[in-house]
Length: 79
Image 1 (cartoon, rainbow, N blue to C red):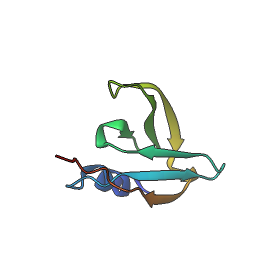
Image 2: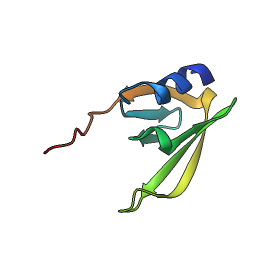
Image 3: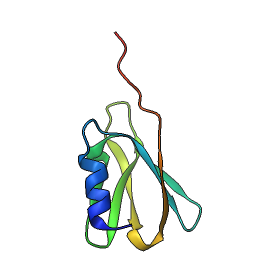
């Protein structure tokens, strides 16, 4: 995966949530575009969201170790 590909995923409108699957087998869900930040070599993903939507921590995911990006179901607003 490249920086450009991740930037495009985060900028698409409407945003479509996705899961990063790493070569280690770990996975991280990106449910909102503000929960991930892309650099030239890594993608930082906010994890352990509190009720207020603020992540308690972040994971650094080297782009070279991202093996798959899987779409997640969108949680549309009801009302």
